[in-house]
Length: 289
Image (cartoon, rainbow, N blue to C red; front, side, top):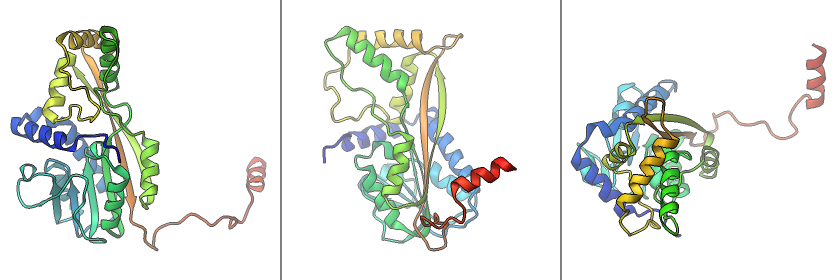
């Protein structure tokens, strides 16, 4: 399989960001973790054994524990630097859990940087006990669309071509299909857009570096970007995506996904031909009423 992302570079940049320790750069993870806690609160279940997989910070585990839905959360990370206590270390494309061993698995802001997303979802599905739940959040299509557009326009204007500088992101409909493909029952995928405002494009890029979220594409240009490129891109950004007060907008589209490991107790679609009334009769009865 041709690799889209440089996993070693991704790990290096995440560790560098952790070492810098900019607390303001965790705003997106904090927001998603709060949403996770709210979503879990609507599930009328207790989960004895849970895991937070490759979430980089303790925010996911905190959200899982604070709502009282589970009392044990195993953190799995790609490097010991991301653990602030006990946990397990594994390659970021591998889930080191026994089949049918977990009641709940959570993944926050990681899957959009995984080369084999279908494979990872299949591993998560296998690690869940029957009727176990997976909840995940990943950056989706439209994320950083403004930055992508102005970098492409500026580089095309200043040179003979343009190199990819912002990662591609999956569409919410595709994510729903991937959940089905991985064997999840009752799969659901929905989209939440978070719009963040900055003084300039350079402030946005500073946050992305502090998150360790700059480009890790294997097809990225190895030539250092020029000052002229960034200056022109910042100018275009201000022209195209600024509010009346002069501040610019940056979009983060978060795809939320959920799915259950199949179990006989779950609701199932009716078998074809089992309906007691035809669609034609139902419509006619509705019109009469």
